[in-house]
Structure formats: C-alpha cells, structure tokens
Image 1 (cartoon, helix red, strand yellow):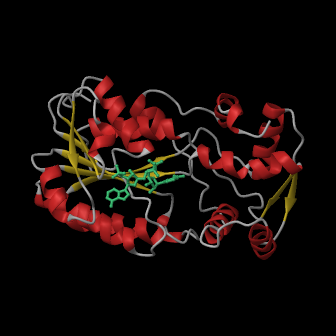
Image 2 (image 1 turned 60 degrees about the horizontal axis):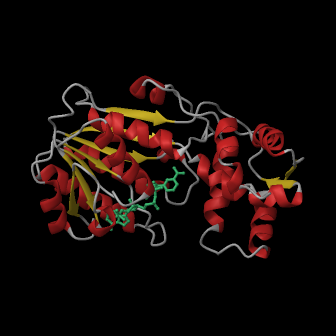
Length: 294
Ligand SMILES: NC(=O)c1ccc[n+]([C@@H]2O[C@H](COP(=O)([O-])OP(=O)(O)OC[C@H]3O[C@@H](n4cnc5c(N)ncnc54)[C@H](OP(=O)(O)O)[C@@H]3O)[C@@H](O)[C@H]2O)c1
C-alpha cells in the first residue's frame, strides 16, 4: 500500500453495497486522492475526503470525465444481468475509457472459473476479462466467490420447512462475506501491483451443502434435512414456489456449477493482501442470525 496515499484511485459503482464499502475503507486508511464514480452522486454526498464524480457505463463521455487523471480504476461489475449481453457492452465501455484515460492498472470484480461455468451470465465476466487483457493495461482480476449474503435468502425455506432441496450434490463452495470482498478489493486497489494477476477472492473454507446445513442447524438450533433432487425437480419446485422466471436459471446454474466443481476454489488471497483471513461461515451466520427466520 506504499504509494496509495498519493495515487489517484477510482472506484466505479460507488453507490452499490460493495463500491461504497471499498470507498469507505480506503478513506478510513487516509486515501486523499479518491474518486467515487457512480450514476447517483447524490447518494454519496458527505463522504469525507472523497471526490464524487458521475459515471455511467452506458454513457462513455461520463467515464472520460470520471477517470481523468486516474492511476488505477476498480471496475465493479454492474447488476444488469436482466438483459443478456448488456453487461459486456457496459464493461467494455469502462475498460476502453480506462485505457483512454491512461490508467496504469485496471482492477475488475469477476467470478470463479468464468471459462467453464454453468452460470448464465458467466460469459459477461469472461468477455470482460478478455477485454481487459486485450487492452494492454496492467490488471488485477478479482475472481470473487459467491457472497455469503446470498445464502441468507437460500436458507429462508430450509429453516421454515426443515428440508433443504438441493441439486448441488457433494460439490463445494467457499462463500465469502461481502465485507471481506470489500477489504480485498480496497487492498488490491491501494497496491501499485506487479505483474498482471488473477486473484481468487474466496471464503475461508470449502463446504458442501450438507456441511453448510450442519453449521446452520448448530447456529440456529433448527434441524435441517438435506434432500437431493435433480435440476429438473428443483426447477419445478422453484416455479411452484413463485420464484420469478428469470431468477430460476441463476439458481439452477449455481447448483449445477457447485455440483460440477466449478466453485471448488479456495485461496489465501484475502489473508495475503489484507493481513486478515475472511470471516468463517459459522461466524458470519452468527453475526447475521437476525436476518434468518426466527
Ligand atoms: N459474488 C456474488 O455473490 C455477487 C452477488 C451480487 C452481485 N454481484 C456482483 O458484484 C457487483 C457488486 O455487488 P454489490 O453487492 O455492490 O451489488 P449492488 O449493491 O446491487 O450494486 C449494483 C452495482 O451496479 C452498478 N451499476 C449498475 N448499472 C451501472 C451502470 N450503468 N454503470 C456503472 N455502474 C452500474 C451500481 O453502481 P452505481 O449505482 O453506483 O452507479 C452498483 O455498484 C454487482 O453489481 C454484481 O455484478 C456479485
């Protein structure tokens, strides 16, 4: 982090959960040349020591203004998974703008194994990684595992009914609290970096669904029976439960991806670059007990 006080650092998507936290963490460490780039600057008014600039990946001119003079830019992937392919355009626009601005390093929030993933939007990340590679700008790709926060929604049903229907088999995943992702992203952006790198930003432990269910039961005191089902059976159950049709392929893709071993990635990158290990899933669930059904 030696030069970070003097480097001009940009965080895109700075009104989002992750972006805002990255900005807060860097500001708290004393960064004075920090630019929070967002579509909604008004949401960030009052963050001490932070310059807020308007930036919309769908408006390249806004990006030229937002990235002007930047040394490093953290491009946070957008949430526009509702329109297939839109994110690729958005992210390409951000990469091209960073290159035009002459930034020395691009950082990007990708996902695990985007080249062999069953997640419907994995191509967005793969193509963005390629665009960054092809830009010729030095880069740090942060391949972020699924947030532990995602589990809070998944667990609502199993905790109410006592049954966890899953197609994930004995595949493993290392869920990571978003706070640890923010810490890692802030540390990576603060570093002037060396060679181009891809860092797996994962949770502390790889766990199967039955292992997660056991931890959840211990934390909540509620028994959960894990019931293996096929993708097709799960799809029907989710539809019958009223899940919005566009979300179902994401859930099935996640289960299939876990089962296939494509989320079976665990690294010490968070500890290495931040000096602190990510929170264990057990501690995360204890801290977020109130977000789970009583
Ligand atoms: N690993 C996981 O489990 C997981 C889970 C959910 C999401 N994600 C991904 O990680 C990203 C950050 O997570 P989060 O929790 O902070 O999500 P979030 O709170 O939903 O934030 C959405 C983000 O998308 C940005 N965005 C949307 N449209 C944009 C546009 N046209 N131009 C520039 N930015 C745009 C927003 O930026 P502004 O509003 O500031 O402009 C904001 O940073 C998400 O956007 C998504 O790609 C990962």
